[in-house]
Each structure stands twice: as C-alpha cells, then as structure tokens.
Length: 455
Image 1 (cartoon, rainbow, N blue to C red):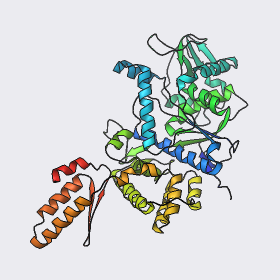
Image 2 (image 1 turned 30 degrees about the horizontal axis):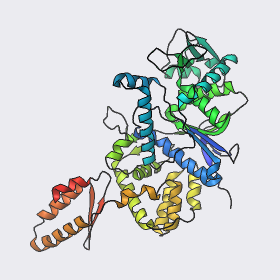
Image 3 (image 1 turned 90 degrees about the vertical axis):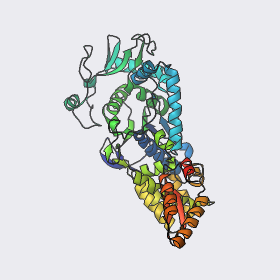
C-alpha cells in the first residue's frame, strides 16, 4: 500500500509544503487550547474540529499509537481572576467546571480527546526553569518583581507574522510600563497580590505570563523540536510569535515547531460574531437549541479552514438533510475501505470540502460501506453520534396530515390542513407534500413540545 502524502500550508513559510514528520513513529502536534473561565463560543470550535481531522488523518496514515496530540488548558489568567472576583466563587471551582464544559461541548461536536490535555498550573516548575534559562542566556531580565523577554535579543522576531517590530508596536496594544527596557518586551513572570493565585519563584511570589505556558508545556510533552503547532489566526501575533522567540532562545539548537497551521475566523450570517450585534453563540447555545453536534461539525467542514467560515441557518438545514439521507443509507452497514480520492483531498491541506464532495458521490452511487468508512476520517456518520437522526418518530403526524388532506380534497376546506402544516413548520419540521405522500423531516431547532398545541 502506497502511503498518502500530506501537504499543509505552513504559516511560517507562507506556502504549502509536503509534511515530513521528524519521526514517523512519533508524530507530534500542539494546539493552543482554551482559557477556562466561560463557555466556548462557536468560533473556538473551529480549530478544534480542524485539528481533530488532522489527528484522524495522521492516525489513519501513521497508526493510532504513532500520533501524540497535545491541547492545553490555560487555568491561570487574569480573565479567570476577574471572573472569580465578579462571581465570588473559588478559582479552582471555576476552572474545573469550565474545563468540563469545554470537554463536553467539544465531545458533542464529535472531536476525539487529545493524547494529552495539560493544565498550565501543573507546569509552573517547568515555566520557572525555562525563564531561568532565558535570563542566563541574556534573553530575559527581571525588574520590579517582573521578568520580561527582551525582544531585541532575538533578531528573527516577526518572522511568523511577517511584520517588523516597528509595525508591531504601531499595530498592537503594547503595555507601557516603567520597568520595561523596550515597549515590545513581554512578560514571562509577574507578581501576585495576596488574593491572586501565585507561586514562589526566584523573583518572588507570582504567576506566569500567558506566552511562556505553551512553550513550557510543549517542550515537556513533545520535546524541544516537534512537528505541528496551530491555533486561530488571532494567535499568530503576539502569542505564537512570542512562543517562537522564547522557545528558540531557550533551546537555540532546536526547531521548536516545524509546521504552523492557522485557521481563519468565523462569521454568522455574513457578519463578524459579536455580542453587540446579537449574533454571539456558544457551542452549548446551539446544542440546546436543537442543533445536533454532527450537523454543526458538517457545516464547519464544508469550508476550508484557511477561509472565513459563515455559519447560516440555511447551511445547517442543508447539512441536517444531507446527514439524514446518508445515515438512512448507511443504517446497519459495516464500514469498508476509505475512498482514496477523499483521503487525498483531506491530505491536501485538509481540503474537507473536497472530501465531502466525494462523500456525495459515494452516496449517489449507493456505496454505503465506503461512504461510512470515509466519513469516519472526518468524524461523521459515527454510530455514537447518530441518535439525533433516529430519535424522533413523526409517523403519527404524517398520518394525521395525510388524512386531513384526503378530507380536504373532498370538502375543499383546507383549514385543518393549513393549521397542521403551520404548526408543524413552527415546531421546526420540514413539511414535504407530494401527490403520493406526506413526509415530515425534523430540522435543526425542532422542539417536540411545540406539537402539543396541535393535538
């Protein structure tokens, strides 16, 4: 069997490159995970789904045991501290609860759990050690209880984002502080007040800056050099730029990450998602409104990760209809071999839209066994994700509407038909009426309770 070649768009080189792992028996990748103080919003799910597909692809090609995937939890952060002050709740209680919410919501979207899910608070010792290393090498300095990375000490700073330091100063919200030698220097360690989480260090009681967390955890779990690092393009600068600088300076002989992947942002009905526009959704909001996790996943996979993705009601309905047809076709079918055409699409910089086109082709040819196997590489049509498609029996209502229509055809009074049809549509059901039959298909947002008013 010929191994499928993988090609990924490397943000560092700004071009698509063939992926060659450092060690094919230990393929390593890191995804920047959530800061756990609240529910994950819809946009947070995009790189999780994208990296989950990459995780599945790598496991398919190199073997399940050969892939080491790390996604962290940032559980020490000023946003968490603020939430604790506002709510009066314990910080550990908040981070534990929101971490569990995150795992449940991402699981509902069909994502596999990574190999490792480290918490920042478990790696303080490693962070302190890396900071000491940077100070010894002349890349960091302590001042007034803070430790800062000296950006000018790393001449390749800006290589990932492609911007000069001057441009970055002009375009960034740079914290002005008297203890900084340069405006662009960023915090590796900062002092903590009595009520704020803190750990003892050579520079006094304090806590880590955000950027050092991922560098320390990646180094500890994946080594000084590993294969893939990713996140949303909003992390490209300053977070990933700073990760590269401190990791390269701490371990100058190493590569750190060799391939960098960044996904574009999410829109809702053509507009940027924001609370002010009233189009801000958490993943849980959509799940609670009746959207199946598999449907949400399908909508995300329909657009390439490198392009802005627009979440729309129309796309969700189309996805649901497609998945219902595919699940009906695959009912009781055992998966066979994966379509090579679809696999090559996924391997071509995660072209999930191209793979879905092949799934449509397999379905149209009735190749259910191949359809199910291939969909699995995308995390679709898996048995444990299918309850939403089979849990609603609307045959009783189909019979009611059929009989009402038969009576109306004789009496020419369609009031009861219109009442039933309007009520079904209002409940979130697609009413399909042809000369020969009535078919009711529950759509995203369907609520069974709304049908009580029709009884």
